[in-house]
Length: 75
Image (cartoon, rainbow, N blue to C red):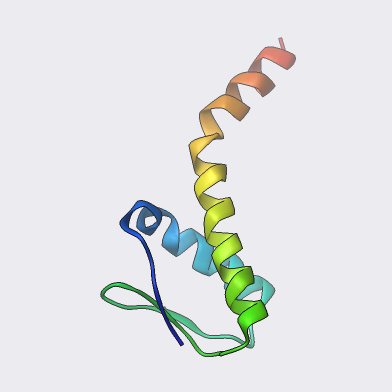
């Protein structure tokens, strides 16, 4: 199944694929010109992949904040 990935999510795609592939090794995910190709048509797995991509975006965007909080707590 081909999934279009919005440009705002593309910087996080490689990390999301790595995380998803670790959790679901039976599903192949490859990047394409406009998104990804997933070797499954299971809509639940597609939803899990999309959620993984969203979580990766949030994780990266809040990295500086988390580091600052941890650094402040360790002082």
